[in-house]
Length: 553
Image (cartoon, rainbow, N blue to C red; front, side, top):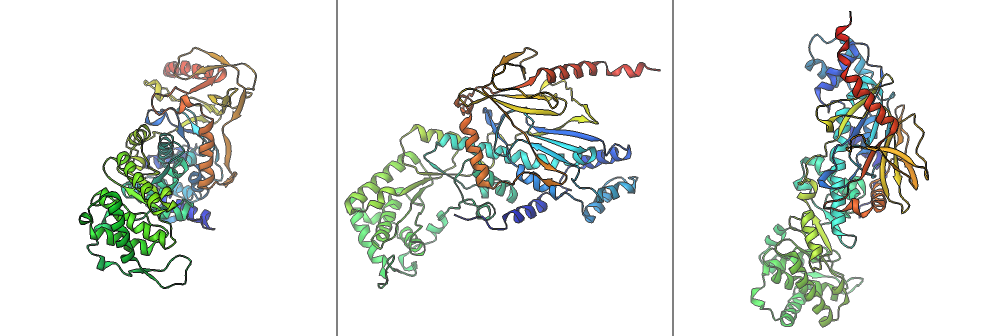
């Protein structure tokens, strides 16, 4: 396992500054900021909310991720002179020079961020982050905050679904770096796949930065690069914990190969010498980490070569790890591999063969993991790449960042598409929990409202159900959002990937199984308080009368 470096926080902050500079945004953020500045409105207090409209992958939940980097981004948000000069070159030449001086002095010292804790199970339409501050500043933050949370939350949620599909008894290895959307996409995928429930990553940089356990052995190219046992160098290995002379491993392995072929009734003439040479060479280099891919030519021959080399290692006091299967019917092959391991364990009286692991990798998807669970198999570890990191079932979470208050007055977007209408005003966010400890309703209320109380009946209006109220009595109530950034400073401890991963697992454990079902889950209720619902109706009504100013003298 790669341990986190002592200066990890500094590394991450420098990484965020390099990856997400202030110019990593859309041009219209600057044109709006200039228009606010020109009108003298840039310092008006404003509030934006970040949320998504639909749970991803047709599921019943999502996970909130990316907050850690958002906080580092806010803390380091400043325009360099080169940034300002570039903006001067792309904005219209009539832009007032005073605006560029305004940008030079800009930072997030006036910004307050309230957020759901990272790693929390969340649902559609729930405001995950509330960003408060001067209008021009919080407008400029929009694109960057969306960029930092959209994919992180999506891939974290995807990883959690893979974990639910695999169950707790099987390890998951993320190996999607080569298939990811660029280096940053690959690193983000490794980080948040681990947070979402994957145990291991093949990404060495992710191990370096985030302390994620790294794993990997060999590719088919390594196996096929060998043709003869003459290429094995050195050809000897010293026994573990021994001062004796090195042992001729090739001769030892040839002897075991003959005996394994006799045990299994296999034909020695079908053995691939190059594959055996590859396995021997690797085993001599890594006698404590021997786990080859055995299907470069055929699983049956690869298995014979593995057993011969692994038995030699065992005789010398080393413990081989297992094999990787990368093609064909993984379930059927794993059963045959396990059968052979057990025969060897019994025949050669080597108990370590009973604990050898079998890794399965072959374009694994959520569906294929579910199929693994429906069939008998002996796969211990599943490696997932493309379908995890590219989120093939849904490429975007669709988070949005919407204005809900300016100058103390609630604001609401009213659209012809009801799904795109927003919920106005600064809000408090509460999670209602039943007597069994399962959350069952997230309540949005105005910030000034008294909070709901455990054991007291509450009237609410479910989103998407018209204007029909309902009532409920929660056994417990928890406040979901907390202040995490104030006056230019992060106000809550920044959590490591390991701590956020633990938060994900505890949050998922409280969720009722009917909401965690991967197929056709029950919908989780998100609702408005009475006062917030009344505000929505009031603003909708006032909007319909908004054109009356045209009739004024």
